[in-house]
Length: 195
Image (cartoon, rainbow, N blue to C red; front, side):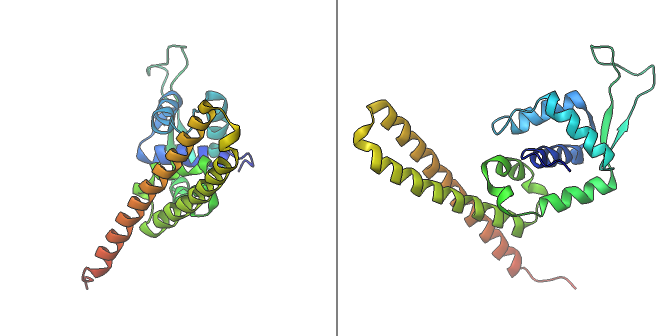
């Protein structure tokens, strides 16, 4: 596995999308940009090395069409990527990770995009970790704002206030999500077990 910081995030995103359905590289790139565009734009320069690495690891396979099959506008054949059984297991391991990488800026959006495939206890730990991280950031922004309020112009002050409001809004949103996750967990725990 690559040691570059964003490599794990892209790997999770690719495996998660291929879990939903097999697709070719161009379609995969479009889906990545649509699904995760607000968090990060992916390029062919990062996608294809990731696909190659996943192939080497046996987590995905290539399905090359026959000569008569439809081709891309470039004249090249569409190679369809599919998740292997090992890829599905690896995806489940990645989705079960609830440490700092899952709630930091780089990884949170990708993990959140695949919450439907994530266990409830893991979702809750990720949400709580993200909220904790943002509460730390909120205190830092408030303290910086208090120190610099008199020394900055009105536009810089407005920008700082906007940042503060954005983080406060995210903390409220996370608090609501955590409340719903806990209520759902409580409801599930109260249901009678089938024999």
